[in-house]
Length: 245
Ligand code: ADP
Ligand code: MG
Figure (cartoon, rainbow, N blue to C red):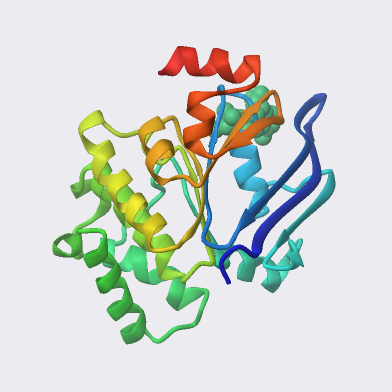
């Protein structure tokens, strides 16, 4: 149901040794919502994303996904990871598997789908990200933009309830950024719940329902993009925007 909270962080704290990398973070993401997280390097954006699918355990506070606390281990954790897809800056495709195999692997291994079913869906997802003609190639034969679109198809193949993107276009040559953002924009329009860490302010303006500004482990302010970009309230956000816009 739209509007209902899917991802809820309450009073989340995390330290790396002495470094307080997430500080009393409260964040709620509704089903179908697109939240763009921006902020200076080192502010904890990646850690926040990683905490949501428990690639990083937290030290205190709670994170719930779809009404349940994040499981710590075992099958429930594998289940969570299949429900919360993640797309990284580095595409992390399996180099020795074809594009099609990369997209089929999770459904077959984790979700125990029949190969034929997984293949059909993989092909339709490759179609959707505009890359079906490359299905039998290996990752190294594709451009960075194409590989990242495959990584998105691979995440979608698990039929996730939400997708997390951590600087998905930062490693790309500039001419390839648009093709990846286009895929993400269409996912957003189709109602996928997304948390997107990015420096692409055009995407934030056009695709986000809400922009969250982070600095030094804290969520400093959040607002709909039009409001945030026109009228950032905190000095930190004003300073950040003045440097990147
Ligand atoms: P961002 O994604 O906003 O650049 P990160 O979440 O990657 O920030 O990092 C936040 C802070 O935590 C940084 O100071 C970073 O150096 C530190 N950090 C990140 N991962 C680790 C780790 N595994 N061990 C120790 N420090 C880390
Ligand atoms: Mg990061």
